[in-house]
Image 1 (tube, helix red, strand yellow):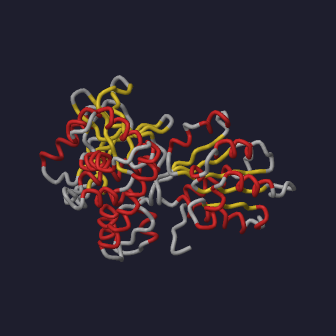
Image 2 (tube, rainbow, N blue to C red):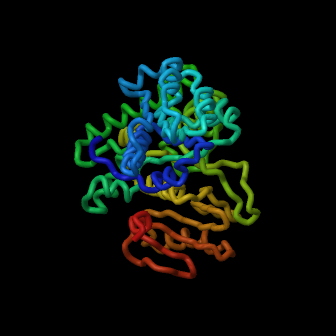
Image 3 (tube, rainbow, N blue to C red):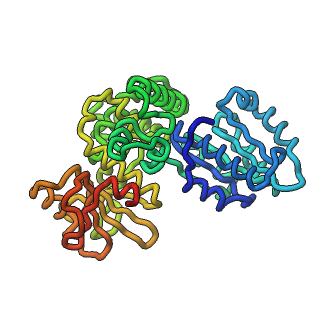
Length: 394
């Protein structure tokens, strides 16, 4: 294993669920976001705690050694050989490549000394027969690419320089700001093509790469803009039925997240347009080939959306009367409101960003996040915070 960063938040969850043998732990996340490394880190933790190799069964079905076990009969044969004397920790990485994997996992869950962990690059795996067979006896751990704090730990350096590189190349662990742009965009293009072909088109049983690329480019160009299937169809010239189908395929492959629109006064979801956000900004940069990527205001908004998800919030775009609030973040009984702006140094921009928050009459926290380093603080109950300070917890 090369240089890695310890994904502490996710490892903490795995340790919390450890030895709950009646529950299957499923790690989902877009391809190459670090799921396999997380599994390897957890296995190392188990060994440090004294678990021997005999009681750890680990297969990555995308490796040379794991490919032989893609055959379900061969996998079952190996699993039958596992010891029965005490807890055996079973790790099945990218299990969706195994035909009939749902039944295999369901049978493993019935063995009381098996503690089972899975990874998958498609959220569809949770809407398959697995949920029926397990009857809810699973816990999903949703994994995102590196946070900026993790990125800094992996690539130490000047904070602001690294932040700009992070916005450009994204948070997939195998990108490297110390390497050339050709290296990084080449790597990202390989990931993007693999996701489209293996995680989207093959599951939709089609090979129309041009249409799905066009839809992806439209979404990447419009992150942070309200949109819907009709808008995408009009913008790409593709039939709405096809757009809807491909869009769902890309969301299942965890390329994009959808933020629903929320009526702050009525406290209800609206059926009108929501917004799409990218799981990784590096893929956006690569897909757009640099076109329209000089403006970092949209990537900043995207970054805040992902960070709020990491912090355990359900994130929606807010609507307050005729004004838009970038994010309404809800976690249990907590609610927080956020506006994101590149700068609020001009009086006009400052007034606009504050106006959306000032009208909300509840006492929940309200924050404007900006790249500015001046005029920070609290004004009329609204906090103005530098976005790098906010995301690094300073």
